[in-house]
Image (cartoon, rainbow, N blue to C red):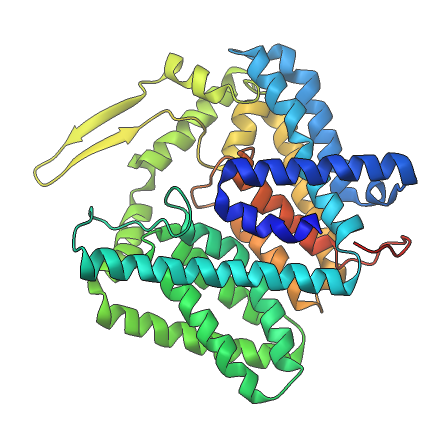
Length: 401
């Protein structure tokens, strides 16, 4: 089944992942037309995603810089909610297919973590030649293995914990080892926000999973995380200082960092057309016209380039306001509310809770984000949405994947 190869396509790169996701979306559209399956339209989050898509199309002619770019982004956005609907209401509606998908995703997460750890050992202990600070790539072509693991680890953890809770305490050991490997890979990846979000996610999951047996296992998971953090501090003090000390220092002066300046630039671009925004994919063109692209600050002990402009503002909420205005931001917030409403009925399901937690961490407000409309980010995000809603009981006929 094509859905089972989607997690593999994610680590092969943005192109393969986008092609696979688009094919799934197209096949789902054919399925909807041929079988007259309207179940996706019963979900509020899907309706709101369609409203956002229509709004993007309707406002594209008013883009401040490039109308063609705005139309292109608007037209292609539909593939993402269609991907989520395909997974949630068509391909993963039967438990056996959901479990197989989760098994593949779990294997990809563990594979990525092990690759990152081997990469760290190779460059630091064998080659001993790398840039500072060290940033790992894992199986990807750029430095995003840490954030990928953070985004996808929680549905996998829910899946593993459900398996452990169904058996004896002996099953806790492989779950703990796997969790420790993933957390260590995130820690050594050099991605500060990924590491902090992973810790935040573990704490939230331990608090919100209402299944007593799994909550007990989550306490062991938190213990593994605390012991791992202590071991990381003792074994890798420089990495620990970057992940924790440097991050706290950055947060204390956020408004004068590149990310803080990019967020300010996003707000200023949005203020040029506050109702409908500058237009999809127009931030990159409009921002340099009103702000200096970058400036170099020279201090006694440092030399740093601070970016005022980039391809996007590095925050989903600021990006939505900058390119789609107040109306687009309100629709986006309503869409998030739709995700919450879809997850709440399944709060007893650790996989659905884990997928919802992954969505929450991706949209966590006070951290830098990749572009919400980026193809790879979109595939990962909307596949989590599809996985989450596949556990939601909507009135639909039972179909094999």
